Length: 306
Image (cartoon, rainbow, N blue to C red):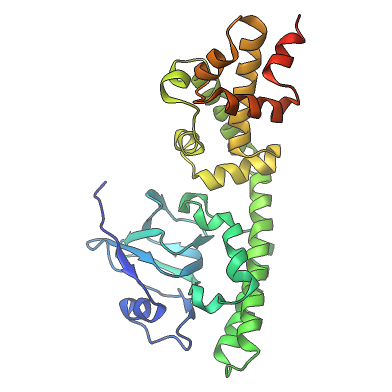
C-alpha cells in the first residue's frame, strides 16, 4: 500500500476551506451535511491528521469510498457511525460515482474547555477504534442519534447565547453515552464473529506460552495480541470486557498464572528460575502478580502440593 504523508488540519475553519464549503458559524464546532457531498476522486489520495474530534454518520452510499484510519483500510458499503480523535490519521479516496447521505460533527477540544466532558471524553475508547470497527446502528438507534444531532443543529443555527454551548455539549455527551450503549449491544449481538475472536485469542496465548517466545521475547503485550487478531487494542479490550468481564491484559495475566502454577506444581525450579522462564525481569514482580491473582505466594502455592 502506498504510504501517505498526512497533512495536519489545525482548525475547523481550515477544514471547511479544504472541503470548499462556507465557513462554520462557530469556529470551534461544525455540523456538515454529507448529502450529495463529493470527495476528491481517487486520482488524488488525501491523508489528514485533525486537531479536533470528528463524529460521522454515513449511509445510503453509491459508488465506493475507501478509508484508511489507524493504518487499517476499510470500504464503507453500509451506514455506520464512526469516531475520530485528534492526532488520528484519516485518509480516503473515492471513485467518480461516489455519493452518500449523513453528516459530520466536528468538535475542537477548546469548545469543551472547562467542562466535565473535556476530562471525560478520554474514557470513550471507541475514538481509538479503527474504522473497520465502526458502530453499525439499528433503525431505532439511528433515530435516537438523529434526534440528538437535530437538537445540536437547532442550537447551532440559532443565535448563540450563554446557554447554547452548555446545551450543545450536553447533547454531545448524551450522544457519546448512547454510543457506549450501542457498542455494548454490538459486542453482544455479533456472537459468531466475537466468539471467533475469543477462540483465536485463546489459541494465540496457548501457542505463545508453550513456545520459546515467552523466554526470548518476554510477556506478550496487548498491542501484540491485537495485531495478531487484526483488531485495535482498545476495541479488543472493550469486546473482552463485555463478553468476559476481563481486559486483554487480564487474559494475558491469567494465562501467565496458569503457566506458573504448572511449573510450581510439576518442577523443582526455583522461584527465580520460574520468573525468568515466564519473562519476568525481577522475581519480586512475578511473586507480587502471583499473590495478587491467587492470594498465595508462589512458595505457599508449591507447599500446598506437599
